[in-house]
Length: 110
Length: 378
Image (cartoon, rainbow over all chains, first blue to last red):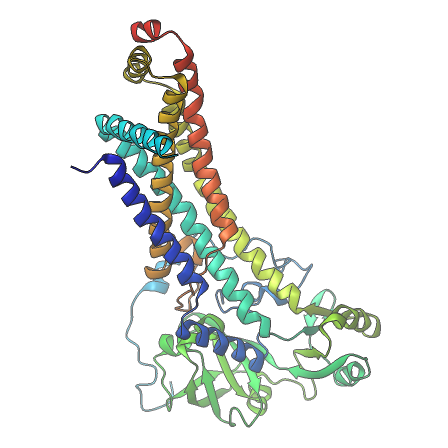
C-alpha cells in the first residue's frame, strides 16, 4: 500500500502542474485570441473609438472617458454610476421579456 | 539530507493519518478555504482580464481628443477650430469627428451614431454592431428606419454587420455617411462633435495638450493615457464593490480558520501529550503541525485557483457575472482572453497560505512546551 505522503505529493504535484499549465496558457495567447485582439485594436484605430461599449444607458457610462468633468450627473470618469446601468441592480423585468422580433421581416420599412 | 527528508515524510504520513481521524471537520475546512480562494481568484482573474483587454484594444485610440466646453458642458466644434490646431507644432493629423446618440423606442436602447467617410459607408447605408443587429433582428441587406429628433423618418439599408468578435467595442454602433449623419441630426454645416488628433512624437503629447489649452482656452484635451486610466479605475471600483460585498464572508472565514488553527481541541491536546510522552521533540510536534497547516492551505489554494480559472475563462464567470459585468439593454457578448497577473496571484497565495500556517503554530508551541502529563490530564 502507498504511503499517505506519496499520495499527498502526487495530488499536490498534479495540482501544481495544472497551475503551471494555466500560467503557460495565459502567457501564450492562441492565434485566434491574438488575431481577435489585433483586429479589435485596428477597429479602434480606424474608427477612432475611445471607449468600450458596455453600458449604453447614459452618456457618461457609454463613454466614461469622454464624460463632462464637473456638471451634475456627469461626474468624473471614476465616479460611481447614478444610473442603474452597470450597477448591482438587475435590469427591469420588461427589458428581459421575450417578444416577437418583427424587425427586418416586414415588407415595408419598420 | 536523505535522513531529513525521510523524517519529514514520516511526519507528513503521521499528519495525514491524524487529519483523516477528523475527516469531516478537516474536509469542511478545506472546502470552505478552497471556496474563499475560488471567489477571490475569480474576482482577480476577471477584472484583470477586462483591464488587460481594455488597455490592449484602446491603445489604438486617438492620442488626443479635443472637446469644446461651453458653460462646463461639451459643445460642438465650430468652423475654424480645426485650422487653428493645424498651426500647433507636433500635431501630425487632425480630424473632426461626428458622433452622437440616438434613443430607439423599439428596444428601449441608446445607439451611438458615428459618421464615416463615403468610401467606407455609402450614402443611404449603415453598418451596425452585432449586438444591435441581434436586438433588432437585422442582417446585411435589410432595411431599417429611424425617426430623427426632428420627427422625419429616415430609411437605411444595412450594408454590413460588424464582426461579433468586436462586440465589446461596437455593440451599439451605427456607422453612416457624413451626409446622412448631418441630415439625420440636422447638424450645422462645418461643425463637428470633437476633434481627434495624432501627435508624431509620443513624448510631445502632454506639451501639445498644453499648447491646445493655451491656444483654445475653451477646449478640453483628453489624452489617450487618461482614457486608459479611466478603464483601469472603472474596473478597479467594480472589483472594490465585489470585495466590499465579500468582506463579511472573508471575515467569517478568517474567524473560522483562526478558531480552528489557534484553538486546540481536547483530543488534539491529548495527542500532543502522548507524542511528547513517547519521546517526540517539541520541534517535531511543531513541524508536524506546520505540515498540517501547509498541506491544507496549499491544497485549498491550488484547488480554488484552478476552479476560478476554469470558471472565469471557460464558463464566463457565471457565478459573479451580474456584479462584475453589470448590465445594459444592449449588452455585448464577449469572451475574455485568459490573462493571469503573477503578482496578483502571488499576493493571494501569500495572504491565504501564510496566515493560516502561522496561526497553527502558536497554540501548538504553547501545548508542546508544557509538561506532557499535565497536557494529557487537562
